[in-house]
Length: 323
Ligand SMILES: Nc1ncnc2c1ncn2[C@@H]1O[C@H](COP(=O)(O)OP(=O)(O)OP(=O)(O)O)[C@@H](O)[C@H]1O
Ligand SMILES: [Mg+2]
Image 1 (spheres, protein in one colour):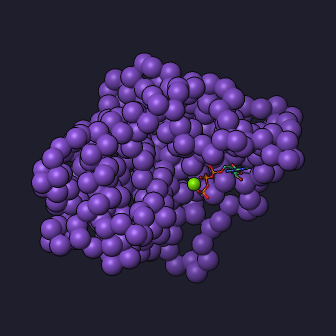
Image 2: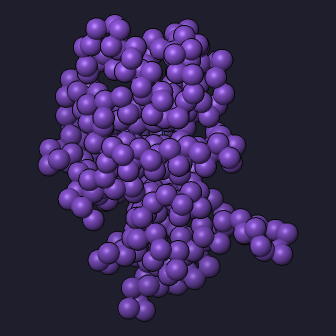
C-alpha cells in the first residue's frame, strides 16, 4: 500500500437513545493509501454508513457520538475536530457521495447553481469562470451538453445523471479522499457499471483515494484491490480482494461470496446467510457471528476473537486454530 492518507484506529461510535447506548461501530480499524481504492462491505446495519459519517464529522449529534479511537487524516486526528475545521476538510480534502442523489440535491435550485456554489465554497472565482469550471466538471463525469444541463433542475435528470452530478460536486474540490457510500445501489445494472467505470477513471486521472462502501462483493471485485469486511460494527476480515475471494478466512465473508449470483449456476435458488445482523449491543459475549455461523465451536459462544494477521487479517477462531 502507498503511504496512508486516512487511518481509522479502534473507532467506536454510539447512539445514545431512550433505550441506552447503541454501539453501532465498535472498534473499527483500517487505513487507506494515497490514490488507493478500498472497499468496505457488509450487510445492512453493519455500521458502514455510521463509519463514514464519523469520518466526515456528519453524525447526527445527538444522539450519535464518537466514543473511542481515532481518525487520522495526513497524521492529524480529526475524530474530535471543531466544526469549523471539519467544514474546511469537507470543502478541500475529504468528500462524500451518498446512496440516493435526489436527497442530496436541492430540488429548487438548478444543477448549475448547486455545482457553482460547491466550487465557490473553496474557490472564489468570478461568475463566468465558475460557470466554465462547472461545465468542465460535468464533462469530466461524462455528462453531455453541459451548458444546457447547468440550467436544468434535478428532477429533469435521470438517476444516473444525478449521481454523476453528485460525483462532479464531490470532485469539485479535488479531494484527497472520496467516500462513496453505496453510490450505485439506487441505479440499474448498466448505469451502475458506468458509474463504477467513472470512479475508476477519476481515480486514475486525479489520484483521489476512494473508499467504496457497498453490500455487494461483486462490485468490490470489479473495482477494488483491497477490502474491509464489516459485521455488526466490527471489521471481521481485511485483505487483498483476490486473496479474500480465493481463501476467505471468515465464515461471514465466505457466506457473502457464496451469495453472489452466479450466471452459470444451474441452481434456481440463491444462497443466503441464515439469520440476520444482530442489533448493536444485543450479543453480550462470544463472536458476534456465532449465532449464524455454520462452523461454530463452543469457544465461539464465550470468547471474542481478535482481528489478527498481517496483510490478510481475520477475526475468527477457526482460522486462528488452523494456522
Ligand atoms: N440515528 C440513529 N439512532 C440510533 N441508531 C442508529 C442511528 N443511525 C444508525 N443507527 C444504528 O447503527 C447501526 C449501523 O447503521 P448503518 O447505517 O451504519 O448501517 P449500514 O452498514 O450503513 O447499513 P446499510 O447497508 O443498510 O446502509 C444500525 O444498527 C442502525 O440501527
Ligand atoms: Mg449505509
